[in-house]
Length: 164
Image 1 (spheres, rainbow, N blue to C red):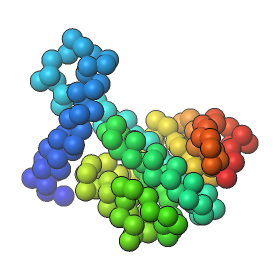
Image 2 (image 1 turned 135 degrees about the vertical axis):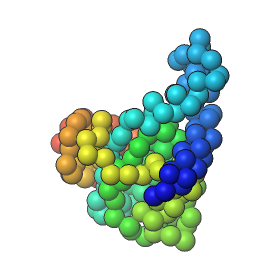
Image 3 (image 1 turned 60 degrees about the vertical axis):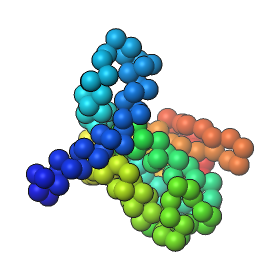
Image 4 (image 1 turned 90 degrees about the vertical axis):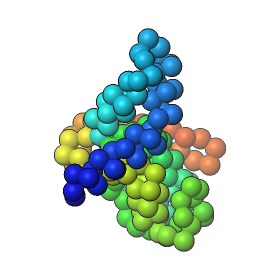
């Protein structure tokens, strides 16, 4: 990747995360000047997470929605995401994704279009999220299992408390 491409990608990402930086500054750092938004975005970009799901947990619309919501939220926070999911068919449309693409491909396309460089391999993520009872692949830190049912969402720190 050329230096010019990298700089253009960084500028696009900073523009996409401008609102996140503004809200963070207003809520958490009210004395910080508006001219420091780039520093806030750069700080958020130091945080890397891994998101893992298996085919069994993506075999339901609820599992797919949980994955899409989690990836979208992490991307909108400016986090770097190591995405480890199979490219399964979307069972129902998953806005804001392209419904014509398989789920993994649609997540990659959406994320790269709005938050370029967000998806990457991370050797030691700060946190690993798994969907349902998916086994955490290569955990290097804490693991949070995102689970639930039609009318409830839950986070569990222990896979034994997780359900598909």
